[in-house]
Image (tube, rainbow, N blue to C red; front, side, top):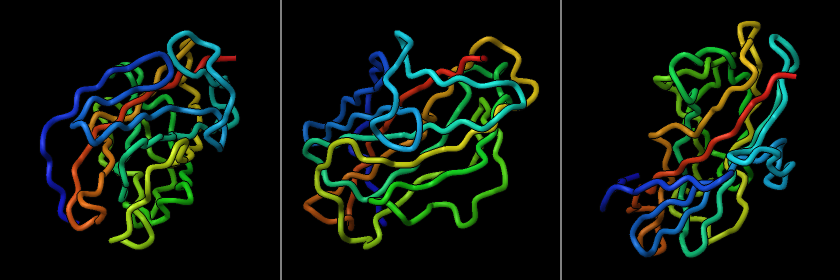
Amino acid sequence: MTIIMHRAAAIFATLSFATIATPVFAVITTFISQGTTCSGTPSISASSPTTRFAPGGASVQVSVCMTATTESVCGFTLQLEADVPSESARFSIVGRKLGPNYPGATIERMPAAVAIKNPISREDFGGIRPEPGNPLPPTPNQLLATFTLAPLANAKNAAYSIRVGKGSMVAVAQNGSCELTDEVSIAGSFRLERN
């Protein structure tokens, strides 16, 4: 897949979602939802969705979701990043399930666990369309991926923020085909609060 970048996207975070300013044809909104769907529990925090955890306790699940209003999408790259370096390796990704629209994984084999760090790990947890030349028409509330996160025993702070990594993007089809695409940056964050 050839990817052409026309111009850099500017990121504007607003409450629990991020809207991306890009060329006129690309209006992508990403958001984080608690649980395994794009209709999870709404935010109980003014700045981002909040999930409860216990240090070394049970895993939690969050989903990264997207709405494309006029764009046909071919796939995406996705990484999770600790908000600040001092909060690195407090949570690990122990599972990732791609949404039904993008079942082709960009990583051949999912590692057993990947620490969420800042700077970011190299693993790309993205997905692509099942038929590479066939983009998904504009669709609201698309599930990109659900992550299962394990809080580590050293996650002792009262709260942590995790965000969609800076290199995360969607590939927007040009002229109705995935032969040529434009990269559009995506962003979003969520908060984990200790029980």
